[in-house]
Structures are given as C-alpha cells and as structure tokens.
Length: 461
Ligand code: GLN
Image (tube, rainbow, N blue to C red; front, side, top):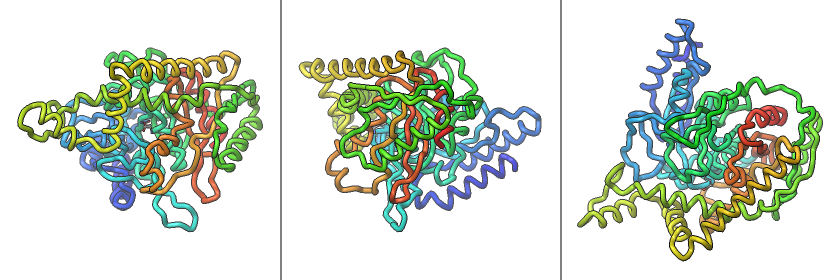
C-alpha cells in the first residue's frame, strides 16, 4: 500500500464517521495528500523516515503552520499560526502525514470533551444493548475517539491532569504522558505550564512507543525540555519482568470505587506476577490531597497563561468603547463557562491575602506528593500499578456532572498525582466492565523511565 492510498483510506473513513463522532474539527485532505505524495517519493528513493506515510490526527492544542489552531476555543477564532510546534515538527521530520485537527475540551480544561466550542465528541463505544451516547473522556477526547474508531493511525494529545490517560481508558486505547520535560512544550497552547506534557494516544503499546520516540526531544525553545537520549522504546517490549518490583498503593482504594475496578486491578496484579514481577504494597500517604491541590495549581497557572487572550494579539475581537471595554467584551464572549470558572479560581488563589492560604499551600502539598513517590522508588519499586479511572465512560450531558463541576473533577483522582510529581504514566486497556465498556489500568514510573512503563504495559494489553 502506498502512503497516498493509506491517507485516502483514512480520509474516507473520517468523511464517513466524523458527522457522528465529531472527533475532527478540521480535516486537511489537501495537505495530507501533499505530505503523502512526498512520503511515497522518499520511500521510492530509499529515504523513508521512521513514520514515513503514517497518517496522524493532531490535537487542536498543537500549533500547525497555516492550519486552524484554536485549542477549541472561540477566543482563538481564525488563528492560523506561522510556526509549528516542536512535537508536530518532529513527527513530520520522521515522515508522518497530518489528517487534521482533533476536537478537545476548550484549552484542555475538562474530563469529558464537552467544554469544546465545537461541541462534544461522541465515544465510538456503546454499552451493550444501549444506544446512549457516551463521552470519550477529556480533554484529548477527539484524539482518543479518532484512534478508537480508526480515523487515524495514532494521535497527539496532551496531559495536564489526566487528559491523555483518562480518554485512553474510556476508549480502550493506549495513552502515555511522559515525564515532564521529555517532550518540548514549544508551540503547544499553554494551560498549566508546570504540568503540561504532550504524549501519544495509540491503538496499542507498540504504536505508542514508536510515536513517543518521534515526539520526544530536547528543544532550545523550551528550557524545561530535558537533554537526555530518547531510548528505542519499542526495543523494551517483550522483555521479561523478572526482578521487577511493582508497587500497589493502598491509598488508591478510594471510597465508592466500583467492585469491578478493584477486580480489574487484582487481575492486573495477577498478570504482572505471572510475568515474573514481585508485587509489594506501598503507601503514598498524600494522595488524598492531590486533587484539591491540582485544582488550585492548574487554575492558578491557567489564569496567568490565558491573560494573553485580550483581543489584540490573537483571534477574536469584540469592539468596545475603549480598550478596557474591548478586553472585557472579547474575554466575556470568547471564553466558555469552564474556562471562566478556572480563570476566576486561579485569580482568586493568586490574589494578595489568599496566596499563602491556597497557592503556596498547594505547592507545599505538591512537594509532599512528589516525595511520597520518591520514597517508594528509593525503596526499590520500579513501577506502580493503579486503576486509570474510577469508572468507565459516562453519558453525554450527564445531569449530575453538569450540576456539580467538582464531581467531574473527581474523575481525575488517579491521574493528577502523576502530573503533580512530574512522573511518566501510561494507561493501558485491561478489560471490559459489566456494560461491555473498556476499563484501563495505569502504570506510573520513575522520572524518564518510560521504557519500564512500555515493557510492563505490554504484558497487560
Ligand atoms: N480534567 C483535568 C482538568 O480539567 C485535566 C485536564 C488536562 O489534563 N488537560 O484540568
């Protein structure tokens, strides 16, 4: 099969299914065929890159030259960057082909892909015997749904507090958030800069390993990216787990967790034991503070990052009687409800008089969470196994969640700790629940030890 044929097959699949799923908000068939033609030429010349001719979907958070990049927000209307994100540039340099831009929660704030200006993404999965539409998770809901429905071979995604891993778990796909610093954040629209990391969502662990290898790099344009060699992650697959220690943190047995999640977790433990790993109980005592601390740190950074959308520099402008009025009208019209909520929380926790009580306290909690993990790793644990989410995918427009944003935030209970500590985490499909919906397990690793996660996740998938 040629790159052109492969690309055309994906474009027709998108044309057929996207009306139903809303995974892509912009399809780029002309660009895709130029890229694919170039791929075929390089293949013919014996100069194929590692990802030559592989069609990918790109989350709308990554800047792509001349192509719609709006973080699925109204405030970035019409924004077409003149620069390319480092992560996508790395993929194109390896020969990948862009199919289009993928739907997401506005500015990556959400856990259901329902805060997008372009409307919700529909999960390709249905509960057995039911026609109810389910969310694909968020914020990388378009990426996860597109991969699950074969609307791309793999997708880029980002994870600030679970946005790669939770949608992967909800759609039966594999998603890895690498260590903070593994991928450059340059050209990725910033949400919470100390937590944001790019990573792939893919159909299996091998594809995720191949994609991350291409996406990762040190980058002079992002001083938090790290100058470490990027290993051949694929080579780690199939290696034995003998001699490995897997930690099971008791604190992840949260109240109200369905029995079947517990059962899935036990099943995962059994698989890893069979593969030769030693299982040890560990304690991460500050786990219960991770979610409240995350929902202070992330909005605080977001409120600062989103100050730049003022109607002058990018996208939407709503005229006013003077410049301040223009700022206010533009921001009032341009941001959605959840984004406004985050800006207000963030501004509040950073304001004089509350800064010490909220923001500084949350940063201290963050250090304690990080230390919990360090102690476990110092004691010889190689990776930690937990559930990825406290439930399977829930319904679109769930009234309980709409009425209470904190309930939506609770979805991130197992994922935010990893961002707070800057560690790598992978979500891997591990089974189905009683409704026939996918459930995922999460593996958390040592800093820059994504190899161990790929190797271990490969045993589970
Ligand atoms: N659901 C989390 C939030 O809304 C995570 C978002 C993310 O990882 N981008 O903040």
